[in-house]
Length: 127
Image 1: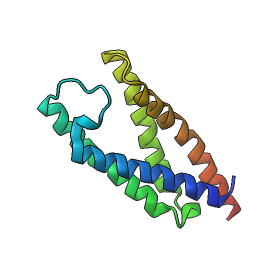
Image 2: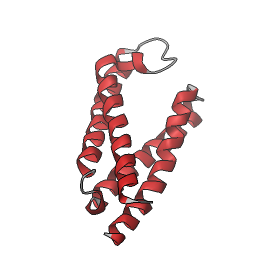
Image 3: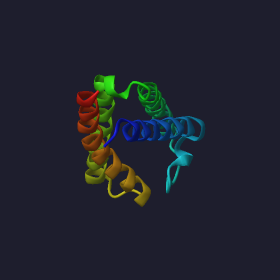
């Protein structure tokens, strides 16, 4: 698990978050598969939260060049992604199973932090 590979992973996660966040701001609930009827309050809330997702992407992208020194950044953003995945579990319990693509995102949100945090720590130790 090299520094360069971690940089690629962090850049990929950051890019996906940035693109998904901006897309959700621009297209609102229409970007969500199987969205059904559009409720203005839900669309407004989604666009609001999407900005935070895009911001997390920017923060990760800024961490790429100095990934070995980005311990706090990686941990905070990874924790936020993990908690977001847990929030999706709450949604499943309360509202039911979402579209399959959202289940894939949930799995990534729960797994990637568990991989990224120790990987960054290992890269930091070897630097």
